[in-house]
Length: 315
Ligand code: CP
Ligand code: NVA
Image (cartoon, rainbow, N blue to C red; front, side):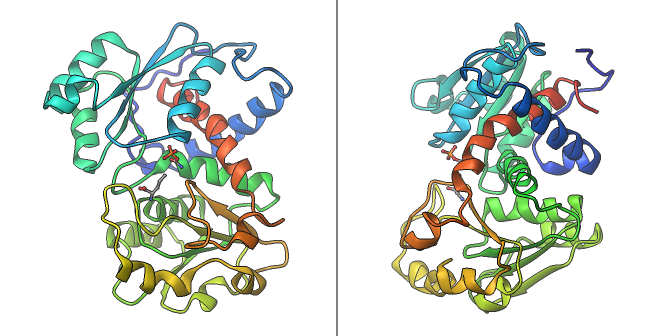
């Protein structure tokens, strides 16, 4: 596979790639997933397009899916990955982001970072001479959303004109979904309590790109006629457990009553980890409309495309 002549490609937000490249990532993921069906997960794809490449993954927060999917993604692309935990690396002892970026750029071919303050990703990208990938910040989770879009398409729902309902907290995953709405031309209805305000930067950008973004405090209004219902934990990593917040969000639980208002073929998505009984009822989570484990598996296929784009193998 040839590398396209491109500059340094970071994936800190979906917009760094843009709609054309996200569409290319989704097509590539569908093709690659199909082509390797039945192979053991650690076997490389036939063309091994990232043979010999190493991804360094730095985690300042916990992870199961992001950590495993990027590792398996690199193996399937013919490369390898290594992990730096803040607790066991110098990151946790205060070595600067700038120095970490410059050191990792001399030792690895790309850097994936999961951290709290989004400014750290931007700083890492500024100082790194290799691609930097956002593996989640307090602000956004673009890699998750590439997997979500792939899952939505696989379940027979084209993105343009899609009606997607987000229920619950206004968080990092929601910000990236709003960004995706603008880039991929679908509409998003956010059902969230009074006092919960989506990040205006993402909402305004999506609207400027032509997406209809509706914010309502009525969960039923958000869910009615939707193609896709999405929720996430009510307490994100780094946030304190707060009983008052749980009480405010309780009316936004995705349950069978809410699913019944959506289209008959509507699907339920959740990035996981889930708190069944809080943001989603057991009946919905375990029910026939839930595609959460397809979504989790698709992290591998989506992350492969993100990596290929970063290395200039996708336009
Ligand atoms: N959805 C997601 O990013 O999961 P992890 O926190 O387990 O990586
Ligand atoms: N909003 C969640 C997503 C976890 C993948 C969090 O930040 O904890």
